[in-house]
Image (tube, rainbow, N blue to C red; front, side, top):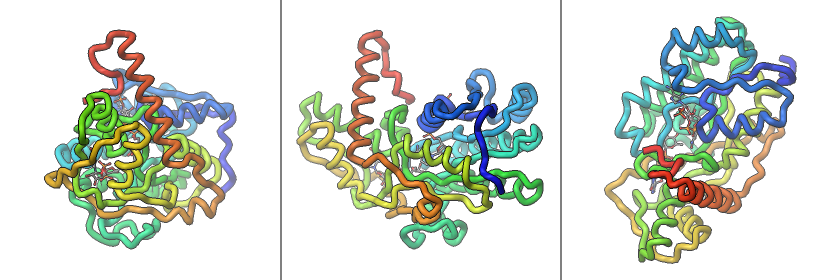
Length: 327
Ligand SMILES: NC(=O)C1=CN([C@@H]2O[C@H](COP(=O)(O)OP(=O)(O)OC[C@H]3O[C@@H](n4cnc5c(N)ncnc54)[C@H](OP(=O)(O)O)[C@@H]3O)[C@@H](O)[C@H]2O)C=CC1
Ligand SMILES: C[C@H]1O[C@H](OP(=O)(O)OP(=O)(O)OC[C@H]2O[C@@H](n3cnc4c(=O)[nH]c(N)nc43)[C@H](O)[C@@H]2O)[C@@H](O)[C@@H](O)C1=O
């Protein structure tokens, strides 16, 4: 298929207030296109009628699906119904409404958790559906696999150019720093910062510290999304990562060093480790000509600075809770 041109297009970013959606909106500022967004208070994306009506009225020409029920290992484990139901409804409604409204280009965002818990490393795209999932996030994973399959099904049955990208663990400005529902990297920033300013001797982290994860800055992801929108038109989903992973223990040391916390790190083994390792193969995406630019340490420094600025803003406006607290 021909390369896709965003120029002059009405581009709907679903989930524009989230970490990924807001990064995509920032990145689209470099394109000559019109960005459309919806507030959740106006349209709950789980509501089929509301979604269809909005599409019929606003007529987007292309769509990026960054809306989802998202959370770290604990939230995924505690709220399986929300992670399955919300995500299936959001993606099914948006993909079906896009087809009805004749949207021909759509990018669906999944997650590296779609792959089997013990997939061979680095995990290639063809590892999908080759083995059992990690139990802490199988509900979310099944919803995300459904999203990939929906995009493929509309391509096969209706010839739609609907593509899917599978990001690795993400972080950056706009992340969720609530300790119960967040992912590990923002949690470690907040824990190290709290321990530092409280003069604590230690900070506690979950699990054994031995699991390995791959981390990508959200601005790199946003770049990859636009790159794929413009250049990619195949049925197979595309992994988006750095190709490099790190243990949670090493990550905790790195975050503590950036934040300036010099106490000890204590492991709470009652919390789950989850998948032992999920390093994705980046061969497909890098073969297409894309690569990330933000090194992990630089990205953590920038994210910590963003966190401090948010905290300062809250202090100045006398907010009862930080704006980044989503508990
Ligand atoms: N964060 C990560 O590490 C990773 C994320 N991803 C994927 O990237 C995408 C975005 O994630 P991320 O930005 O981190 O998540 P966020 O939680 O930051 O953002 C999710 C967005 O979806 C919106 N949303 C959720 N439910 C509804 C609903 N029912 N109706 C309307 N809007 C809704 C939220 O709206 P509101 O702001 O109003 O709450 C929010 O804007 C997801 O598809 C996720 O699976 C993939 C891999 C890793
Ligand atoms: C993106 C991805 O994110 C999730 O999968 P995950 O990678 O397992 O998620 P996580 O970031 O929460 O944890 C990574 C590792 O870090 C350890 N860990 C230590 N200390 C803290 C801590 O304080 N908080 C958290 N959250 N984890 C901690 C934790 O025990 C685990 O070993 C799923 O939502 C999945 O569906 C998904 O898509």
